[in-house]
Amino acid sequence: MEKLISRLKAETRAKVASIKREADKEAEAIIKEAKEKAKRIKAEILEKAKKKAEMERQRIIATARLNAKKEKAKLIDELFEEVVENAIAKLSKVRGQKRYAKLISELIKKASEQIADNSVVVVLPKGDKGKIKIPKLKGKKIKVEQSSKLKAGCIVKASDNSVLISSDFEELLMEKKQAVKALLKKFIEGE
Image 1 (cartoon, rainbow, N blue to C red):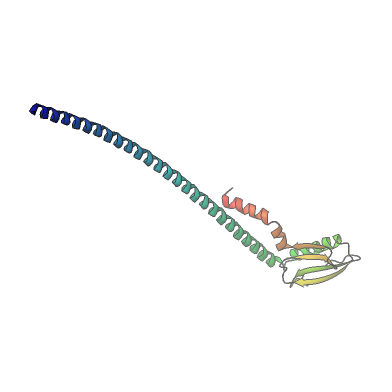
Image 2: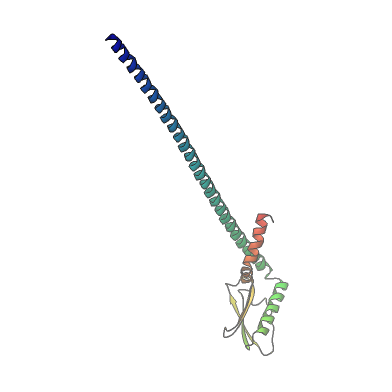
């Protein structure tokens, strides 16, 4: 009987050892698979994080570029307004000079000749009425008015307002706004 017990113990130990080896192999396989899965998940998480970081970087760059473009446009607008103000201020200074009076007289004459109506109205800046020589044109009656809105230049119009020829210097500058802004942009960008 002892042999039988001894043999059963040996068989049991062998079975236990075999089960333990199988369990160890299975555990190793499970651990290996878990490590590989963890490695794949880590790589996926890193890749997603890299993509997210790159997208965020691109968004930040795009926002910065847009803000820079807005700032540049704002600067150009401010510079344009400053250019217009300076130009009008300089024109206001030359309003008392003879060459300004001569130029305005010529503009009035040319504009009056282009209007077919026999009666025209000349609008001058307030204070210029006595300084500007209004040309006499054969067959034309010329009425002179003053406007505080007009800073420099003149406006000539038919008495019925059907035709208006503006030589308002500020208005002429505003008509050239895009060209002036393009020059300012080139100046700012150093071209």
